[in-house]
Amino acid sequence: MRRFYLKSQGLENKGATIVSDEKHNSKYLLVGKWGIKNDALSVYDLNGKLVSELKQVSVGKLPKFELFLQGTKVGTVTTPIGFIRGFLLVHNLHWWIAGDTVTCHFKVFHGISTILEINRVQINGSAYIELNVFDQEHLPLLICLAAILDRWIQKRPPLREPKLVRTWKINSDATSYNNFLKENLHENNQSFHCRHSSGD
Image 1: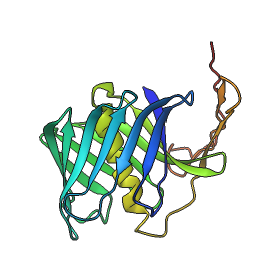
Image 2 (image 1 turned 180 degrees about the horizontal axis):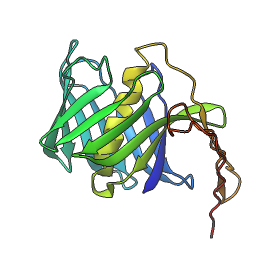
Image 3 (image 1 turned 90 degrees about the vertical axis):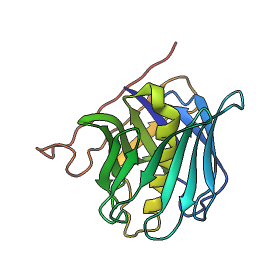
């Protein structure tokens, strides 16, 4: 599993966002917007190459999106029940997404296997979207999905403030995390603290 972060866009729905790994290294650039037909979110690598896109092909209560990887259409995202209960389907890739639109805790599944876990967290006082990625091959597509989930829930209050907190030590190579357990993540609802440091 690898962990990545992108800053929550709130209701801005525009501009560029850097996608960083857990060591605060920039890995991708996410640009674009959605909301009207033909809008797109695009993911570029550090060389400026377009690696994935999510294009909006319909609007309304049941919007539809197409996913592209390396310029090839690989899937279609639909909202069979209007996302009211946090459930989406990704056709062709055979993925499905389930989660909580209040806490922004989602999982993306392929069959019964989890390929992505999404959490809304606080880093140095700002809201970020955390991606715990179990499928590296489709990482650029998963970034698109995480971004659209983040922007979607902003329009559906009440959105709770993150209870999961990360702290980056920006001045050094080390990254430290203080994890505060979110509600219902474990059956025993027991809080824990985990500190992880890495460096050359």
